[in-house]
Amino acid sequence: MTANFTSWGRPFTDAKMDMYGGDITQRYQLGAQQLAATSDNFTEGVQKTQQPIVTGTSVIGLKYKDGIMLAADNLASYGSLARFKDIQRLYGVGDNTVIGAAGDMSDFQHVQHELESLFIDEYCNDDGHTLGPAQIYEYLSTLMYHRRSQLNPLWNAFVVGGVDPKSGESTLAYVDLLGTTYSAKTIGTGYASMIAIPLLRRLVEDREEPPNEEEALEIIKTCMKVLFYRDARSLNKFQVAKITKSGADISPSMSVETEWGFAEGIRGYGAQTQ
Amino acid sequence: MSSIGTGYDLSASTYSPDGRIFQIEYANKAVENAGTVIGIRVKDGVILAAQKLLDSKLLVPGTAKRILTADMHIGLASAGLRADGKHLQTRAREECKNYRDNYMSPIPLKQLSDRLGSYLNAYTLYSSVRPFGISTLISSYDKNGPQLYAIEPSGLYWGYQATAVGKGKQLAQTELEKLNFDELSMHQAVFEAARIIHLIHDPTKDKGFELEISWVGKDSQYKHAHVPAQLYDEANEFGRTQAESGRMQE
Image 1 (cartoon, rainbow over the protein chains, first blue to last red):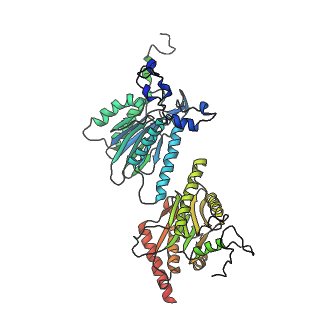
Image 2 (image 1 turned 180 degrees about the vertical axis):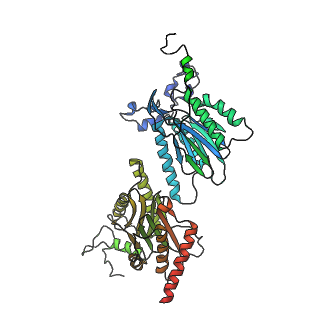
């Protein structure tokens, strides 16, 4: 894709020409002036992130009676290799917010550091205010959009969950590497947006009343189980974060019972001969 | 006045013939006229207490704080020119962030003292600037335990078990020397700090003041914070009555 916005959405052959046949690649270059000002012998060699390297798979989240519940497994993959099996992908920001991260884990670590810095800055003001989930989400989505606008995205999809301790208002929202944002009663990133969202919608959103804590945990476990069955980059070892008005709690790692007996009967894949 | 300094005090970059730098000594004078700040280091944490002299009765209580925060685990309180104290907080904040960005861990207080010491020292080397008119106590609790340092206008810094700077320094230090730091809990130290600040305040001579107390350590979840309102009220009341009964006996 070209950075030249006049070419966007046009067939490739036309992309270089304006309506009079002039070469527009020489014009309207976004940031061309800055590029010229900051360029040196190494400018040609500079590459921005073009793919994630060590990655985490999906994060799921739902609203329940007392607040927000998030879950993410403990795997960080290196390509298809299950490289790190004890990585925490849920990160508490202050006492009332947890973010769950999918995508590049080093970018996630960078974001954790940024948020920590932000939080300390606010703490040092010592004015009685702290950042609630709504503020942290706003900051994060601005950061993500800013980075994608520099064509240097942080390669993540984040789910932000939290409850404002004063108003009791809960936040469950999503932001990804494009700066796309939305909030909903149930959220799943990546694979979970295909596999877990239909389940979550049926189990959470179709109910009359929101689930209580026990039911919510069961729903989370059901989804994590299905994700483990279907997602080849997942692990049956995950953590669950509960955020209520009284604070956030990230559980120790847990797993779910799985049943693989049916695999015996599958034909058409693998090494079996009949 | 004309005899003081006799021309050798116009710049921080000029020695007097007997090897003194008057600008630094004048900066220390600014400290000596300021409301007292004390720091107490006990087993589980560090307490800072400040006597905030009230320039006006119209000031809103609890505002314009003298005890400031530089990082989650670091507090600082300056005696002297208030604006210089605020500026040093800004610098301390940058140093703390810088350390975190580079080393991904909270800055040890010894490191911060060194960096701030160097910063203050730089303002004693040039004719175009004046030294900071503040002595600053900094407190922290980290993996090395509780720590307390004091930084002087010259840039010198020292680690302390307990110390005081400002107007009531002498009396406060005499009182601090009587304390048994191995036995004191953070909670008790808050009360002692309140007592000492009230004790050094002479209501017949001095203008009104507001007590400020902060702590960092076990009781504050290892974060630097002003003590909770209830504890503050208790300690303030305790300090006031103790100081009053002390004056009655005299």
